[in-house]
Amino acid sequence: MPSAFEVLKERGFVSQVTNEEAVARAFDEGPVTCYIGFDPTGKSLHIGNLVQIMMLAHVQRGGHRPIALVGGGTAMIPDPSGKDALRPQLTTGAIDQNITRIKKQLSSYLDFDGGRALMVNNADWLRRLNYITFLREIGEHFSVNRMLTAEAYKTRMETGLTFLEFNYQILQAYDFLMLFREYGCTMQFGGDDQWGNIVAGVDLIRRKEREAAQAVTTPLLTLSDGKKMGKTAEGAVWLDPGMTSPYDFYQFWINVDDRDVEGLLGHFTFLPMDQVRELGGLKGEKIRHAKSVLAFEATKTTHGEEAAVQAERGARNVFGGAQAGGEDVPTVEIGRGRLEAGINVVDLFVEAELGRSKSEVRRLIEQGGASVNGERVAAIDRMLGTGDLDEEGVLLLRAGKKRFQRVKTG
RNA sequence: GGGGAGGUUCCAGAGCGGUCAAAUGGGACGGACUGUAAAUCCGUUGGCUCAGCCUUCGCAGGUUCGAAUCCUGCCCUCCCCA
Image (tube, rainbow, N blue to C red):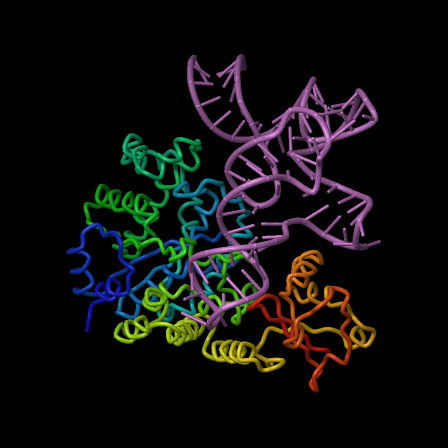
């Protein structure tokens, strides 16, 4: 059986490593405690966080102990790495609320039972930090000269960097030190953009504890079209089913570029690599099968098997040409009386959220991109009535090629 | 604290008294072609009671028949000096 580190490498999670030999040995020798930090600034994690989550999940399956650190303390400080804008500052109450939600989300991937995985909040130590003590014990180990030569800061030197942001790295290093002391955590993972911050922690542990901690970073996942993972026109793809429905989540994976399929299967499913390679090797139209496996597996781990089955069935119905698609297609309800009175197509499309404004929907119709029950809408003044409903009192709206909405009367 | 530059529609970036809902590029969206892929081509891209009207060019006032464009104050960003 391959070690957890071999699994990570094989699946494409590994980019930079502090000391590859030492890391490999650690994973061979026994349970390793490793951590990744998550930012609780949002109400939900999104697909961009999923690489890190899956990395922890794979490690846990290899018999090791992951720690998910949420930055309840650092959330109040912007991370200058790679970003050019400050993130909004939240109240501690809002952050604590987000943390609760994030933990719930993470438990779909990680098994927190009996301490097999841990979730900790750096607010526990950061918020009660004493400035002077901190400067004396931690600050003395950081060289400003060296920090300034780091890529993350160098670029920010052009546009300006506040003292607040400058401290981010120090606090993240301190987190690592605390986790090392409290939980024997000897390894930190993160995206490539975090390399500087992570290594700062490794250095701090060496200086304070004279121990060698390790760092492993993941390549920043960019898709073949150069876009950042998880961003769509609608914004991020969220893990919260209330923010991105399982159907849309499934669709996200179905719509990935052919060239990305194999890599994504490695990262976001637990399928054995033989199978991943086989699916990734499919050519031409056959690769759609690989995409449906990817979509199904990814949806299953995030939303559960039942939701995955539903999403798949809904997609098959609607794209396979079945009329109203059945319960599994995203649905909005509308009072039957509204249809009896007659409702304008444009209004209905807006209500079904297939367009942001009436102008947008009008444009859609004028360009021939809107259809009702599979028939192209010819004019913007088309009225819909009960005659457009099927036996079950349902009609199907379609915007463009792939956005569907089932309208049900109630 | 002093001096300089600047804040324009999703982003970048033109415009510097009317011809401006605002060039151009990117992105996004729609169509054709396809495989719910990519590439390519065409079109669209503030809102609405849509051949007209309304609201936008950091904020608040002012000049003018008329302002994104001129003036005043304020806020914010960046650069140089202290």
